[in-house]
Length: 188
Image (cartoon, rainbow, N blue to C red):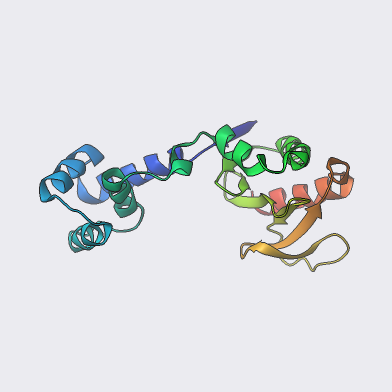
C-alpha cells in the first residue's frame, strides 16, 4: 500500500499540538491574535513565545496571520509536478523509483517543495531529489554501510548518509531495488 501526503498532515499535527498544549484550537488563537493587531511576524512570535506557544504550533499561527507559502497549499501532485516542470526528462526516473518503492512494503510518499521522502510507518528511509537538470539523487538511510560502487556519500541530508545518482529510468535496476529494500527494512 502506498499513501501520498502533502503538507496537510503537518498542518493538522501542528493544530493538534496547539490544542493539546494550550487547551485552545486554531480558531480561538486566531481570534486572540487578531484582537492584538500584530503587524509583524517578529512581534507575533515574541508574544506567542511569552505565552508558551513555540515550535510547529507557533509557526502555524504565524502562517494563519501572515499567509501560507504557496508550497504549503499545493497538493502532493502539484509539488511533484513543480519539481520536474523544468526537467521533464527526469520524471520517468522519479516514477520508476516510486513504483519500485511502492512494491517493497507499506511506503508513505511525502511530497515537499524540492524533494520527496519515502517513509516507513516508523521513519524516512529514502529521499528522491532532482538535483540537477540531468540527474536524480536517491538518498538512502543505511546504517553502517560504507560507500562503494554506485553507492556514494550523500549531500542530500544528514539523515541520508548514502546516495545513488540516477540519470535514466533504466538505472532503477535490481541493485537500486536491493538498496531500497535494505533501507526500508532497516527503518521499519
